[in-house]
Image (cartoon, rainbow, N blue to C red; front, side):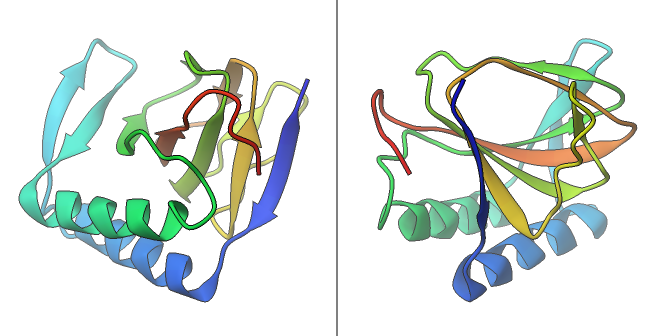
Length: 132
């Protein structure tokens, strides 16, 4: 199972901080996703996600990026078998107990089951066979 923790660059960190600030300021729309959580949207957030994609495309073949809020645990689907997970707030944990920290991004080729309460995460599916 491929799973790798990577530090974020200063430029990426600045975009992530702005995304966090947009969410905390309530400048987002939400799309309900059953009782487990929701996907964030909104013009200001979309602008920052476009910048995020530009930065990530230097290294990866990014398909899209979305920000989600989960109330508790979540089964993170990975249809391309290449996914970046970038925590924004909260402390999501892997089944193994490892905490995902906001100063890192995580590359995985597997479906991940994450645990925690009230956390936000950016999920970035990559083109198949893309590697860090």
